[in-house]
Every structure is written in C-alpha cells, then in structure tokens.
Image (cartoon, rainbow, N blue to C red; front, side, top):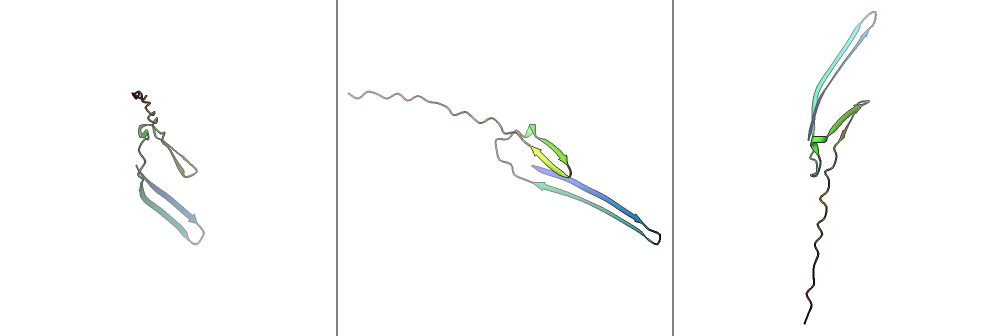
Length: 75
C-alpha cells in the first residue's frame, strides 16, 4: 500500500517596519507491505487533528476442514 500526500502552509507577519512571509510546500509518500488476508477493497481512511487512521478489515479466516478417520479392525 502506498500513501501519497502533500503539505502546504503559508505564514505572513506584518509589522510597521517589516513584512515576514513564509511558504512551505512538500510532497511525500510512504509504502507499507500489508499481510495477506485483508479486504483492501473495503479499506477506509479518516483524518483528525493531522492524524491519518486507516481501517482495513481482515478477510474471514478459512475454517479448518474436519476429516473423519476410520480405523480398520485387526484380525
């Protein structure tokens, strides 16, 4: 999974004898290898207070298969 974004910020301070302006811009990306068994099609992302939260549900685990074993009688 790769997350890409960019940040932009501007700051301006006006005083009687000077003007201060600052502009910041930057792009970023992060890649993470996810384990198998996730439903990536149902992934959800939320951002609150600058924190990105990803929610990716797990796929239903494969149920174990039960096999009956019959023992032969010895003669």
